[in-house]
Length: 109
Length: 114
Image (cartoon, rainbow over all chains, first blue to last red; front, top):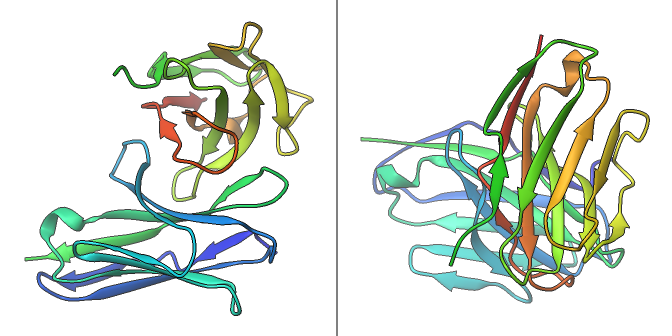
């Protein structure tokens, strides 16, 4: 079983829509979680960290559910510029960092 | 502040040839990571250094891949000999602490093995 699993999508949504991505992790000892954004042919860049019960940054909300071992990313009022691949990542007690396969989002005018 | 530097940006080789990639992390970052990202997949950690010591290399195919960070600053990743399935983007990242803080990625080296 993979350490981190995501639905690869693609998600195609109209501008202004709300979209949510989920990511599950297999290691219950995982300590920290992150969402990265990766544009086509570019390197990943940190979007948000998710350390405890979740956090919000403008239109983006990340949540952690330790009981069910998943994290989520909610994007409200989608913009064309939100089109990208969203990668979730988990850091476990073995100092190992695992990325999911990424979820592709296209926001349509 | 300068970001993570990698070179070359692109490399095309034939199978069974050797290739080396170079990474210079952000100044002062003790932790350095090498990832392999195959098209359509997420980055896969190959090796993680803390200063010049290896923290994790469990997913590094050691029969053909090697990496070093001799002075605890820049690093090289080598593939010898290359196979077709090694075609991927090789990403280098660095972070200031080894306990789960933001990783900063370089632009990557896109390797094509023919």
